[in-house]
Length: 406
Image (cartoon, rainbow, N blue to C red; front, side, top):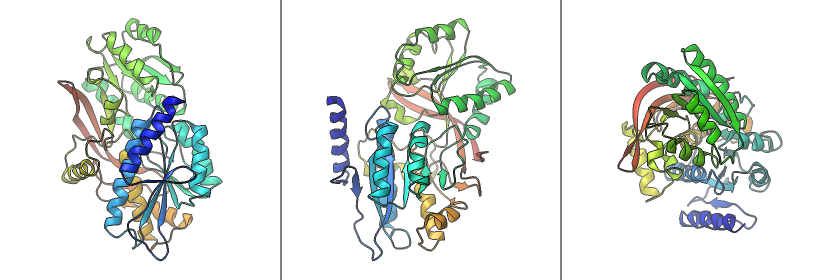
């Protein structure tokens, strides 16, 4: 309880410093600097300010603040400013449901963005979409198969991540014997099902596939199976808090030094907050953006974010749902503009179905009509350790990849 309170106080301190105000019933609000006769557009953000996934969640609210401040500086949407309301999902679906209800019932937001794990999305989507009759934008990469009406997905899907990554691991890197150590919930289960088909279709073999509690701390038996099975690629879907002990024990076993490769499709620059640099060296990921992507727009975006949140350890990158948050807010902006400023769920959802973003981190994006998912550029990158500092080297790019969902 003491540690939880410290985390809450620490998160509140960072939010206060960034201009957020605490509300009497919990949560935070970021008011625009100007008013409109019709009032503000109310946007709810539900993310992990505390809990094991807080490094990703805190990147989420910072990106949301950054994007909304830029929109408001440019005059809002159709002249109407955005007011942000933030609730902590605390890496705990039970806590999240109660806090998300506040966004709907008390704040009366027009749209909710957030949720990082699929378990969180599944917990909060009913209070938002069905009971709350509110538009929901889910910004994180995930396992696919989410085709709920009024729920738009703005992160990568298994097809966008695996269809190019796995052939690269097998045919370019020569890794053919895969292990799939996994957290025991829906994202790993469905992603692994898809990945296994791609592995086998490209001549690879899954040596074993196992599932562990999210807080698993001991992996010696798993690492023995990796060694004894002559595994040369660990395709990991373990998440925090079990993530840190797994990566530590795998590294200490000498797997990477012996030529083994770790691949995990949610690893980005924010993973610096989870591991020592040496444990990440050589890791292969596939995401819609890496900071090494230096097209002029992405570069200027990164510079502006760094200026707004000077010295932050919560980076603007992809795997922490940050790019999906950026993309979701900007696609929502485009949709509201297309309605002429109407904020009704049905009108905005119809416009969102055809929304296009011409520029964004890693490139533009476009919703696939009728599919509630977006086309986007995808990149394969390898993590390098330069004297204790990690960076990603982009080794492959695919343009406007179809999500192949719904």
